[in-house]
Length: 130
Image (cartoon, rainbow, N blue to C red; front, side, top):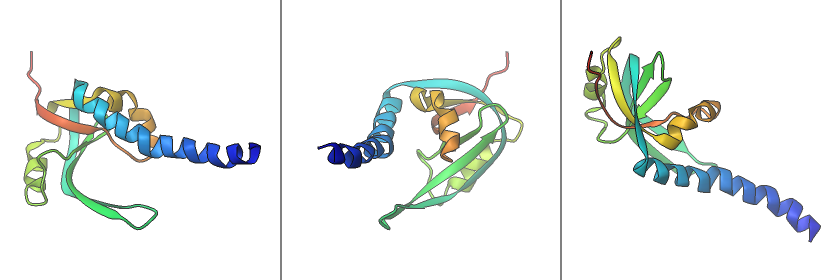
């Protein structure tokens, strides 16, 4: 019984951390969002590919947005391989934008950086001066 707990304990924790928690965070972010104002330093469109340990992979068009004050953000919603460069070009370096981001991801952005991840952007608009 103790051996089973020693073997299964880390497995259960691993599944929780790498499968359940990210899915729960995405679901939370979809219904709990916040607006943050950031200064864009660069934006680049492209396709990101990923491969799991078992060889399954996927590709997703996105715009990687680098900012001075908010870190790296990813815009995927509405982005295709064909329009990613055009969308990136709309984000002017030095421009101030209001980005809508999931509250959970925004709160956990420090941990995201440790794993090479970035919060997802659900929408954006130029910030109004005033």
